Figure 1 (spheres, helix red, strand yellow):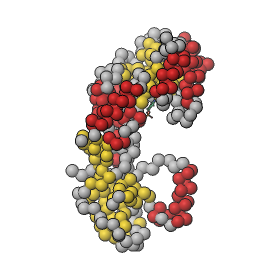
Figure 2 (cartoon, helix red, strand yellow):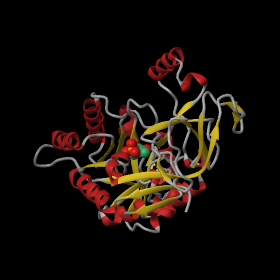
Figure 3 (spheres, helix red, strand yellow):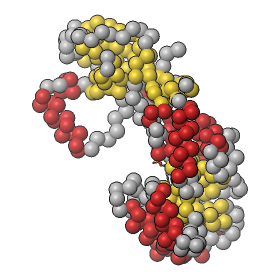
Figure 4 (cartoon, protein in one colour):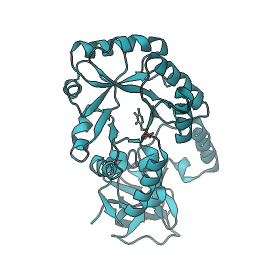
Length: 350
Ligand SMILES: *Cc1c(COP(=O)(O)O)cnc(C)c1O
């Protein structure tokens, strides 16, 4: 079979999941988006194996797929907004915990008279969603019959100062009302310390940590991804090739491999300035990058090779210099995937 394959060492992966689960207070596995490359069903099964009582999804539409394989509670991370029909249905669902991030939304949801299980989101330095600390008391006062499940605090990725903010916001929250603090991107040791600091050693405030990437993708050695070689052509410098009929910069081979934009391959992330400088350097030194080519995630003959042109949909064209022995059609070559954007054709358990 051709395509992009992810080989997963299931035993090793599960051992990693177990270690993370054991060291994370109140672990809430996050299952969302492309399912971190593995898909919602597989992750929901693993959450069940880990005996998690609660998982989190990104948006309301993800609840159904997770529920097929997981019996516990499901938090919807995207904040509730009036007018979203599915979110309004889920507000009646006892297995779902709804996130509310604006004072006016607490009021709106309370006015429906539903007994929705809610987490109230506190505004952090991310400035994405949340109610400012000075309005938390008003949010509690507006709850009505809504069932308060705790506070949600979504910190930026840790850059050193996270603890101070986690503590400051956690304190403001429990002063408004004592409840479980649900954090994202807070290290376990800090969460445990904070829980004691806010509640006292004999009466720690319950803390739960939501984890996606570090849980599912935290052990790169548990997986390997490959793509099938679909075709090989010898080319001469200056020959025009591909959709864009670009000239090839030197003699060599074109290797056509499985995998393209539909797999999330060759989709460039926004570039920080450092790599712009790197680009200027490679332009000055006359590399293939200077010829307008981009380094691909495919490894052939022990090195990452260059795309001949930006990939499209399901296949990519890779340039291999003349000095190299080209691979055989049908051979598998390693491809590095960014699993938060990738969609593979198959996952093989090894
Ligand atoms: C997506 C998300 C997470 C999981 O993020 P990772 O970096 O993948 O662990 C945690 N919390 C919130 C609120 C999220 O939206």
